[in-house]
Amino acid sequence: MRKCLISLVAFLFASPLLAQDILPEGDPDYLEDQFYVGLTYNLILNKPESINQQNLSYGLQMGFIKDLPLNTRRNMGLGIGLGYAVNSYYSNLQVSEIADGYEYSLLNSDLNTKRNKLETHLIELPIEIRFRNSTPTEYKFWRFYAGAKLGYVLGARSKLVTTEFKDSFYVRDIENFRYGLMANFGYNTFNIHIYYALNNLFKDGFQLDTGEDLNFTPLRIGFIFYIL
Image (tube, rainbow, N blue to C red; front, top):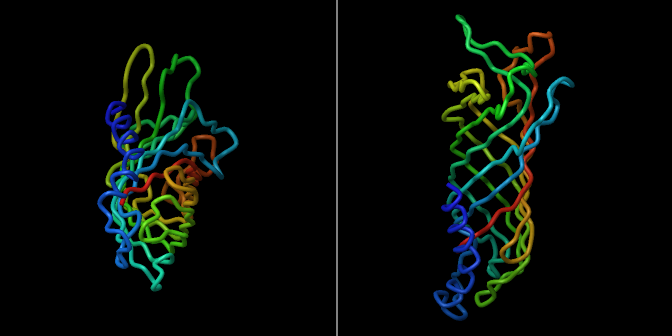
């Protein structure tokens, strides 16, 4: 996985030079930013006070966006895409399988825990209004893309690794339909990506064994890279 990411980032750095050779000079029908890949740090907002994040909660996203220019200068457009994302949330929330579902509790400090995470795999549909100062011959430009992202969770997994044992299983209490607001802005290769979920990660009605509501609202902040 790490080797694939390194190769992908290296390709992203080289892509503007490749695009300059491929794009016909003065092409009035040029398109921008049709493929994307992003890396994020995943924060959990609105969580119970007893829940703490641990280790590095990360996210990886990639996909294709159809660029639809909205004016003759093509510096304003609409982007509609389809992508895949995996997001991990490391915390002291322990998920346990029981006879009629799952039990949520705080991680026992006596377990000698190495890793404890909740991981989701999603199909995503980003929808963006795009502003940029690009031209048919300029591949380095400022951009600001804002909009919404819809998603569907294909699977969610809890994984606990201690010095004595490993426990991993799929969790069905996750809210499958995801939606939130996002913004991407930056210059040339490096761009900031922000996504704020508008619904909780878990379905309504679930609680910790302490009686606290299990509210997890994801906030993802990181980098996004575009390829023509």
